[in-house]
Length: 425
Ligand SMILES: *Cc1c(COP(=O)(O)O)cnc(C)c1O
Image (cartoon, rainbow, N blue to C red; front, side):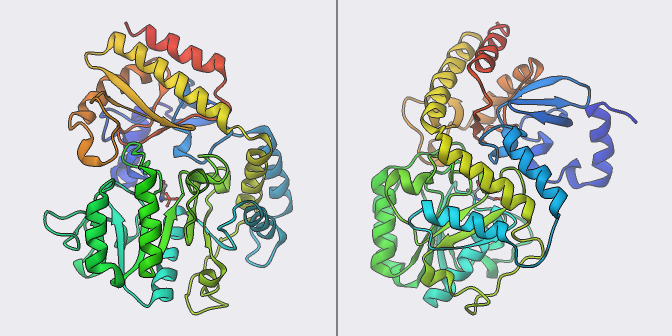
């Protein structure tokens, strides 16, 4: 068997679209051949040729404790010995649900699904059922998974004139989706005075982290909360990336703003395919079989994901790694940028929050919406991505994806990264 990444990719191109099963993995936005990894542990990845990388992508977010944390692994192995899947009632999802409900005040009831996409799709359905309205509002630069109705970008014209972000989505499926800019309170007010009573749901990432890291002003999110209440719309916080990562209670807890429904994914499954939508009992009770909103899943609440997720959340709650991770991420990413700037032709900076960081060219101010992102970012990023990769430092393979630290990124490993960057000089 041939074990070079190059050859494996050539073979993959023949059997999967673009050679991959999720687009960013193809390296399309950084160019070159994607690396094929075969093993992971803690902060490290090993490719099929045996080369080791320090991993700052961490599977795009599920791994707060790094790859194959020993305590989580123990639970996973124990579960595999008991069952793989039951398709019936079991205690594991109950324990995870109770743990979350006990610690997250705005979660009264929860339903587990298999991905973040499913969670958001289902939450929207609940919001539409609850309000009897069809229209939803989202924000430019926020990603909510690949469901048709939210795979839209702002059109050239007015809100409501949205354009699909993907082929294969008829305009009929997105005509109920409005897209507004982040960080524009006046525009938001105006929009609601015109359309407020038509809106079923406002969906937002309370910390947009899928088009770079775009921290929002608290007042903007507070305005969303008060407009949702005033106009009777369901406020959906998509915390798929931020849930249990920006502190245990996510961005909602950090800001002290309670959504009506919240979506989880990534960390909630501890590295296994789990998503969830949750929130007020009055809304969640609309879901089948207690209510008329149909939603189901053959592998939903899979025992392995439930137990890996519970162990991850228990560790996160008890060990409370958040403030240490936050300081470490800020300190280290600033050091990284400083070292990069000694070798790079432009000035980089980092925008970070807790264990998320994003590298972007310095523009003199905090970037909060996509119109503020330097247009050269993609080209800029290519100039650092490949040299770092060569040195064994793996950043997410796209300038628009955020990087992740985990508790497995020890000071020694982080210092090693900086030394490796210095050898680029
Ligand atoms: C990753 C992500 C999703 C999609 O989750 P999948 O599990 O990839 O379907 C949705 N919303 C946000 C904010 C995400 O970060």
